[in-house]
Image (tube, rainbow, N blue to C red; front, side, top):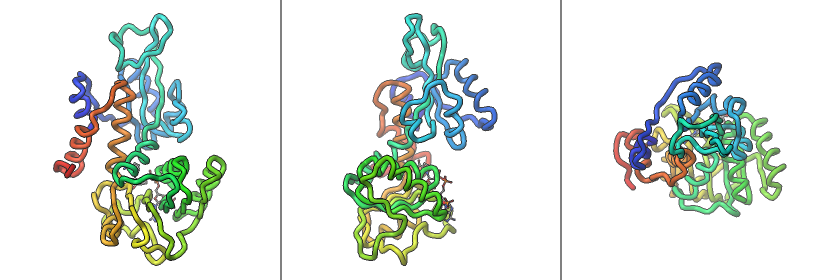
Length: 284
Ligand SMILES: NC(=O)c1ccc[n+]([C@@H]2O[C@H](COP(=O)([O-])OP(=O)(O)OC[C@H]3O[C@@H](n4cnc5c(N)ncnc54)[C@H](OP(=O)(O)O)[C@@H]3O)[C@@H](O)[C@H]2O)c1
């Protein structure tokens, strides 16, 4: 996805994957800085650890408590910080600093809005899961002014903690730590559990407690398999459905924009991602 985007933008860059042991993250970041890397993406568990190792943290990364994108910036002789990827001569800097960003959180909302073609303001949502991704999704749904949010998680203490955080920051959102009442209509049901990654997994929800015919749209953060058992059941019940590939795409396009300062070629990147994950072009 990133290499397709980079090539389309005419940049002589390469996006490479490295396995880094968590206890050597500081060394890896120092090495990348010394080698004048433009930037980095990080995945679990490095996303959380990197908060301690970057020189500056963007407010969104601070708020979500995780850094998934780093941009290296160089200081000019005039004291100005310039992104390495946007500098005419990246070898001429006095010093280099690392700045941590988070592009995951906005990608969730963008994917829900664009892939399900729905607005979230005033909507009623059910969120399954309160792990790393579930917590961020809950906060973002609250920030998008949903009217009611049902938080369901196997470990109740985690959904209670998320509910407390939301109530402190977004007191207007009605938080319910249970399924909706029978017959209540729901605009969006979102799966942020890992149930569905394996075909042998149970469904992530209790179909005795919620009738999918009362749900308008269902989003599953899982994108492999492309259609989880939840999405199959949702489609059979007449719901609009989308999987998490858009989330992965949009966190990537946002990272490329942070490094380049230019709009990313979203369609090119979507095609490359789709071909890589599913082995065939997308239906777009
Ligand atoms: N599309 C994307 O770009 C993208 C990005 C990030 C994550 N994801 C997907 O989102 C999902 C969650 O990721 P995460 O990072 O939040 O993982 P995580 O922090 O490990 O959280 C896992 C969640 O799944 C629940 N869960 C796991 N096994 C369960 C079971 N047997 N029964 C009931 N609940 C169970 C956990 O409940 P407990 O709290 O009770 O353990 C928790 O809510 C994964 O499927 C991941 O692939 C997709």
